Length: 415
Image (cartoon, rainbow, N blue to C red):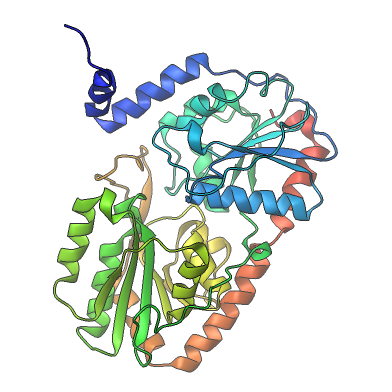
């Protein structure tokens, strides 16, 4: 029987997602080019960055911030787009048109280990050899998963966005590889809202607006939007002067998840869904229209949304756990109590690691914070001002500068 074009691909896609991803990682790891050993010396200046530059994703945004940070430190930067290289990626940003990097310049690869071999395999031949290869990895659970071992032979060192993620990497057999905490320098390129205001988003001027902003392409359980809805309803019921706005990305690609959210919201007139694709500036304008930004996450590698909200001077109610604690404290954010439980992501099957835990935020505590902030505009203003100052100090150029200095000071001990 002759196979029709595309049949093998359809069969492949019909396999369960987790085994399919594991098989792809193992197969590409056999073929991908290995980095030079021992780790090459790092030149005085310059880095090449491979990342999802042409895709609106957390890793892509982190890479863009990293490139901007290096440029601000006087480092020449060569950007190499990985967006079209990875299966299923459709670029929605202009890809960089930088020339190839010169020999010896280190390569920072901003993709997670399961797709790292594939990314290296599909880069131009000869790009890997003679360079220090740095894996920039983001993870949201307390322990890195076993399948991340596949990426270790392809990197000389690892960069992570937070101390929390650095600790999670200790579950891997690092073999002496340095793990450096290098968050994206968000303060260098802070959110710049467009001129849109509440009227443009059909938000009532007199209401206290609580915003939850997340992408359904991320882990549904990890972002915990159902917890946010529960906390809002416990705090305000159906009060018309209290409004919850759920800004949701990719609802069309995850209809079951979106239906679950709709069911949780019920017919409450004070819960609204914003599903339009907004520009970065318009998305920040919506955030600036909110009085409170709510993130009852179970774990964050860094947490771009609460970080951006704090940079905008918004009062943030967030689970007091994981990577976001690198840039927030009890004075700059409303930290919600939690208990640690076994991580159990069932919808995507991506965020799984043996022995990993995540936070179970206290819904009653979150509701109490929402009520307190809603009823006290002065407290919101004080917290927002402290948030802007604290996040700007934590998410500047210092961590990147320190990482580059440490790497150049001791290049022979990192591999």
